[in-house]
Length: 377
Image (cartoon, rainbow, N blue to C red; front, side, top):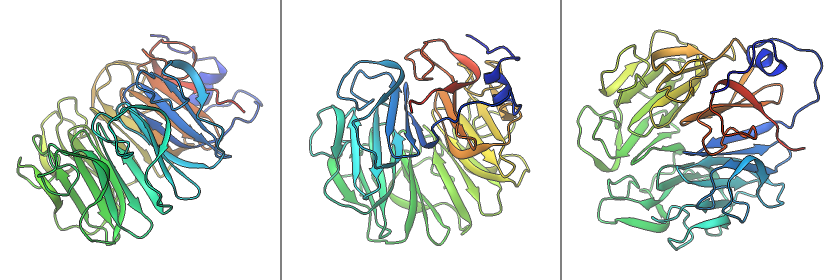
């Protein structure tokens, strides 16, 4: 691995220091990461992806990997993006939804199981509000509060019952019109309603549904009775969520300490990660978790095999460790086996696994501390 020298401008900025005037960088407004690819929406509405591209997950019409950002088409109306293991989905400013990449289980929702190396539109709806791409299933909420899922359903992760193995078009989850956000893991799904309740369904072999048992659910089941959930993220086999009082709670698999509880014991019901009550947003992945605090700091914990915790080591951590000393991290960050995040000054930083060039720095060298990504103007 390559660790950026402490005296360089890149390292100084990552540590919250200053290195003199620098040219303004294009601001990333939305960042997403799959297993080995990364995408970001720039302020101005252009979309860029980099890394692995064997099944078209970069969306640029090819299957050629890239160690630097490549533009997805020429549209300037992209609003937000999320990435699954080997595919991507994004919403445009007109409320339309588009997906591309791996499609073996219908996760692109174009009515087929054919991989796509350029964006294909999901139906003709123009009221998509947010989307979450998992391993091989996708869920999205519309502006009318309805929830829709599609793709693989072997473990009931679509929330529509267990009789359907997979579906290649959006299928509505129940009749509720109070869903506000959704998150997809490897084979489970969780979603928050406008009343602050939290619901999960799908695979539950590690207690990731938070109900205390290890039985899977094919339809949404409420997690406890709390009505103060504000932000939830589904990892591969675990879940974490922030409440309105800024406390952080996690449950499910914990082999690498990804629950942030200071140990590696799995938990089938929500347990608080430490005693800090200043968390703002959390993101979970295969076995690594990162979260921001109200002071703009970024913290990560769990699996650190490729340096994705950003602490300069490859040591696994069972409690949060801070990423440098910067206090300018925004809510736009994501973690898998690599981590990327935006700072309020407009810069995008990535670190961790880089075997396929997913850090966007022009190399395939892993990094255990943040390195800046140069998004084209």
